[in-house]
Length: 408
Length: 112
Image (cartoon, rainbow over all chains, first blue to last red; front, side, top):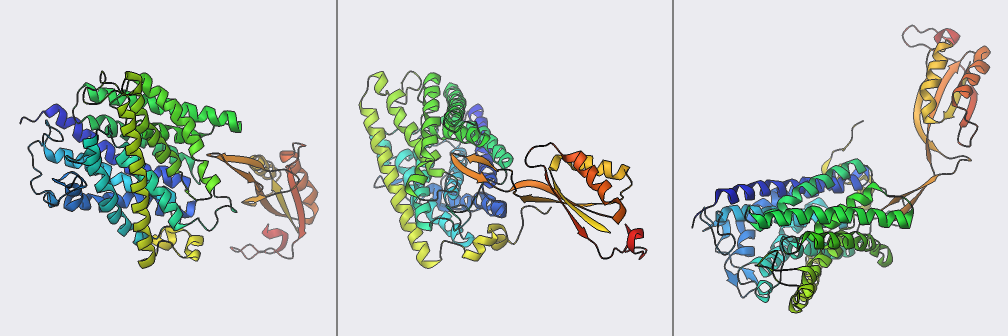
């Protein structure tokens, strides 16, 4: 099999772009917490670059994409990258080295658990968090990835479409975030103290890096440098733009002021929502999906107030709600004129895809929620999830890391 | 000697410093503070969550002046910061027992 150097170049660039999203996420979240927690929050994302890189090489990649075990999980025969070489693996990407596919996928595995930290911001014990990262990646991320993308995975065999990780990354982290926020409990000050974001300029910087990196995330997921990558690139931009506008106009109408945090939130909702659909729909459909996402996720972030859980930085409302909608929207807007390997949605004459997408969203929601619940309950009984009340008062930065974010 | 503690609108601080310096007052201390008086706060909204902000940012400046120049200093401060609207601030005047310049150990008005 011949390696196409154009494809390889694009995948390497995309890999680097997706890598940048994790520090981008760190800034996005870091700006939204109180100043005493800025470093602790940034660290939760940044440390994932260290932990998950090793986990992925040693066993994570093999469990996710390795030879199938009962349609549920990969086996360990690719552990330590055994057999993952410089020649292509045509099951995943026929024109780039297998190792290029592996490292591209690694960046997805890194950012996904980091997304969850927004739901448990300002109270997660760092020591336990490291263990949680490893357990979650192994027992939640790897199975879902195998089901949706792995050869032999049961959802893939069913015909589920997920272009760039709507199920694997955003629904899984969004619903795990819900379980995490419920198990760990609300912040001490939740509901009776003002906890406004301490630095929204930092949040905007993070959102900009995320948007930039998302071109690698979605257009890179074409796994070639050709026209499909371009389609995904354009759809990514269209949806992000539409959702930015619809969120801002929504709150302008409801609350009388268009906020900057609203613009950033809308952008992320549009990006997370178009992720599963980026390579299956037309730009006009992407704009429509984006417009819906801004409105839907604006409503999504108010869910926590109705139910009383402290999803501090709105992972459920943005990633869970947004990407579930995007995944279902494939069942409406997908067309084989955009991507022959995709399918036709309801508006292009096929009913079955919508059913498959709805079913797969349901499965991913239930599995992510239940598994994360079990992992966290186990950790709660053994290591403890929360920092002590006085440490919470003091902040993550001093209590967990012995540092201050700002010395002036 | 008297200490003038003036809580004023943050943006008027530079005008006050300049005017006091021109009039021959040779030092002041200031702090960024938050507080409330007759002026109402405002509402901030983050992702739909509303926060009522009751404590507003002000600057508190402290100047110690000789007894004979208190009125002059006070009128300079008022001239620089008064807008006639709620939120212009307050001025307190306190007696000062002694002042000592550390470098020369001068005391009293000489030390100001």
